[in-house]
Length: 516
Image 1 (tube, rainbow, N blue to C red):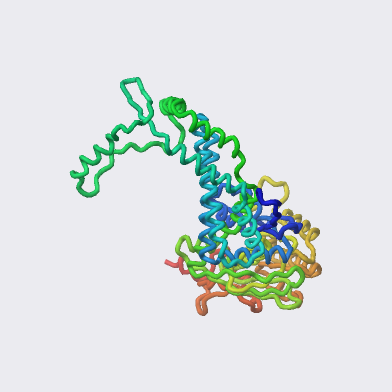
Image 2: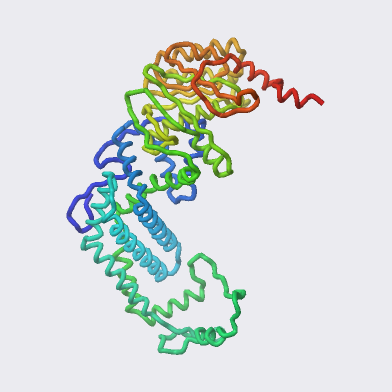
């Protein structure tokens, strides 16, 4: 990559180290089950490149160096001055792109060229401003340091200097175009301005003495679309004839600088959105007191430790609605691989399973993850099986569908995979569910992969030393109240009984409701 007019190659990349080939891991079947689709939708909402950004947020990697590279860029953005400069730059580039998009829709050539000139002026100002802001900034990431070097070279190049100077010259010349429009019935006469009095200013001056506080405005509000009416087009055509040299300068400028946008500046803007969009999404959560951290990641070790983590999609919803978020901790010591989570319904078991999956997906993107501290394994794929309503349009029943899905997972899962199962086999009898659950668990244990198994079958928690039992807790002395905390602990044997009681509305609070 060569900076414009500089003759010097300066490599940079925010998303990955320059020249490093990165193989993205496959699989996105887990996205809906883990509510990652809600997270991606929230991050990309309102952005012009939302499809491109959304696809990027599904491309996980097992490359530790790439993830550290992105972490360092995020750390640079923690500097308020750097963050402010980059946000201002992003806003300016969006304005440039908006100008160019609107100009392409305009019928009148001169208006189209004028909007393009304004776009170049905004672009040049944005480049100069960002180069000045980053020049003395304390940057630490290879991505931002490489871009600063490129930007200094580009902003100081002869080519950019000529573009900036010609833009200023063209705008100054056009700013000197003044004309008078005289309207007499259907006839409009356009002449060069020759010092005639501006009656609008005179009228405002006369009536200023009668103004008393705020008054109702009777000014006409014109449409926001910058297109011209037919009368406006005719007036402009006459103005162009009156000022041929000025508009010839504009025409030549537009022709010579049709491709003014440096592709590497545009690439930086596109890549920057990955970082700023995620920051915009989580900033309200950090303002509410929730913690995010840069996880330690490892593509080999499966020992994990996470403190004060939470379901990101649920937290976003709760904070927006004024609710409270209950964080959880977990750890997987050496030799531990699978969590079996039991306990009463509506106690946070499914949320814990989703959180586990979200953490590994976000970590593999190089994003800060929910929690005060995290050490996470970089998996090759995430498989999920969540309880769903039976689809009457399918020929297979729910149990058969569950078995076929599980067969596929067991065939594709490797020792580097994560499998998350949420109350599968619930459509069959307890005895069958116990048998099938145990068989699936033994297969997963044999593959030595990580996983979460949410189940009311407590016996699964004691199948092997690699299985860790976790339970959702209740308020002491009041089993009807959930704490939404999921902690390590032996299964208490009541999960299935509670599930059956709740299913048939036989819990203590439900019985009280039925007593007159």
